[in-house]
Image (cartoon, rainbow, N blue to C red; front, side):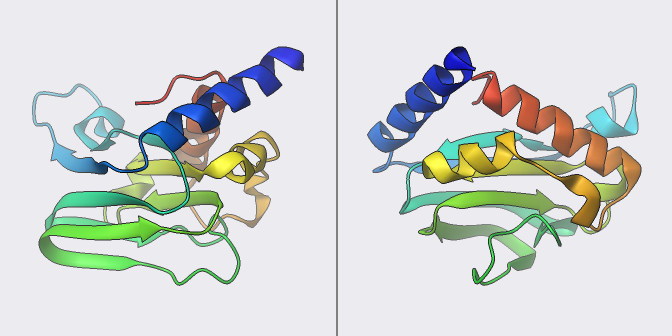
Length: 155
């Protein structure tokens, strides 16, 4: 438990130091991938941010989208639905855990997690996927991403 708390503190400090930069998230379709989960993906798949940090989502064109994941979005925060845009920037002002999915490829596991502030990391530690409206494959991906986030393996 002490190691997990230390990891959370290190991740929060890293996020605070990066607050001035714009993080970039790409959406990929890799025809050379061996599985659908590898073929359709956000990159990076995990971010730890400080409140107020900006994320630029690239390539929300064609069949790729950026959508708030129902059941995995902070209460009271406006949801997102980005479609048909080469670049869209979002500012993550409110602490919490944000699940993002692609409308078409989310069922294959094209999801990502964004933890904002220490509260986002705490929410990842307490993640309950029963209320998340997603496929089993997407839920497995969210669980894996939360575990990676808590282990300090973020991009």
